[in-house]
Length: 124
Image (cartoon, rainbow, N blue to C red):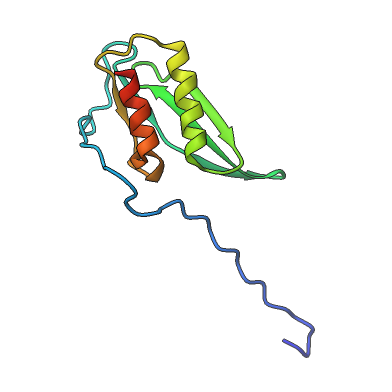
């Protein structure tokens, strides 16, 4: 390689959001029944990482399983609990009566966090 002036390119480490168990993992009430018969019955959320010329970004939406409507979302340059709290605040400010709502997630570290569960309990 030296003779031909070649240099190895080492791949960059891929981002891994997994932090293990950081809090309480909620029961899977939904049990893969993703059909909702009315609005605000079942919401789902996740964090998606994507890259562009600007670098990495993290999108966190809440979707209503009744019609796929985006209830609220937040875009951030880092995946953190503040992003999730902002997203929840946007959703709760738009929707006041959420009695009986099932809020489903992949149980990633953000959704195990104490601040996330406290924010949901405040809305009960």
